[in-house]
Image (cartoon, rainbow, N blue to C red; front, side, top):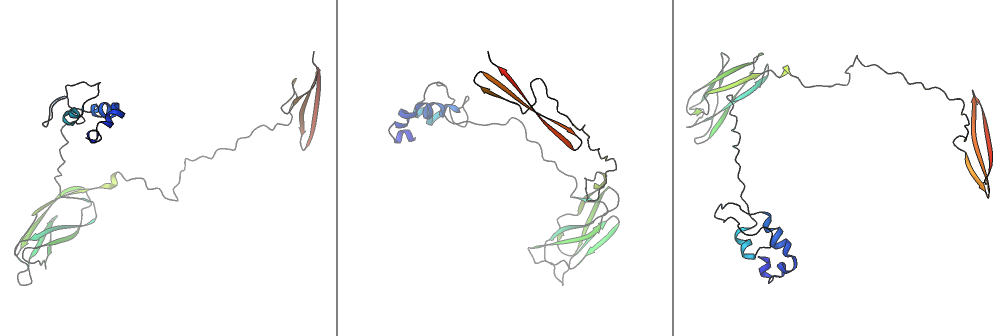
Length: 240
């Protein structure tokens, strides 16, 4: 420990942190993995030996079982009425022009033959076919057979044909219309032509004091069409 290397200086300077808060923040309540459970004080500073043997460690266990992986019964999932490519891996022996290999795909009652599949001994090659899926949703089984040397990684390919157009996502375009849109009228507010002067004047008035005399000035405006009149009212009050 670092405290031992500096001759106990760490414990002398910051014992609450280095020998109490940090080591007692985590410890075993039950012996596990070869480490003993801590049975000492949880409020007092621990010794260097106790820290090294029992403190500052923990074991995390999960009681909940992880969710099992979902195993799909289908090898491929295709959209309806779509051109797709299905491939298999051919290996075993050697395929060359003298000993060619031909792969046959039986899809929906129709057979697709793929020839000229060549590969050296100890290697493999992909054989693929391009076909169009049916226009309706269904489950399909593609049967694969081989003529020649070697074999394929799969002899039956299970496919699921789905229709994604049943729940199409939004596709906003620039010329979209909203026929239910209604333009609101511009609000009209009453035109204010006069500003009455109250008992204590309108805004803009001010108090001016001259010793024992107080003078109040009020400014008002009267508007009539395009003509306007500015009025100034002064009120003088004597202080007692």
